[in-house]
Length: 89
Image (cartoon, rainbow, N blue to C red; front, top):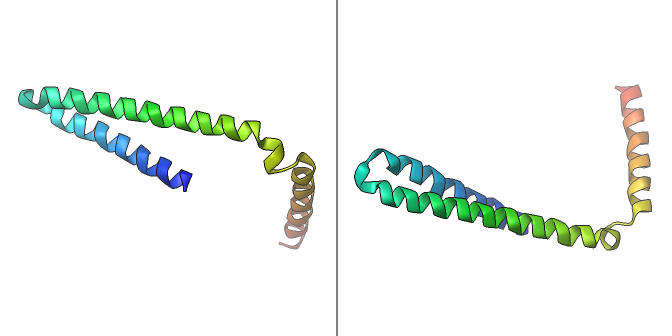
């Protein structure tokens, strides 16, 4: 759910920047272009800050989410499966 919101927000920020670039060619829409450009950059910066905050939240909870010994066991089992697939294929 969070990833979907971030993707949609990113698309909105990119579309604001594209719209500002499209309006830049005419002098009568230069002010609107500047406003859209500022809004796009601010929205993009807000998205990046939200992503960094979310990563910080996950980093603090990394031991609660998946214990390290479980990650090591999964990696060992994956290595065995990859070895079997490589030998048979």
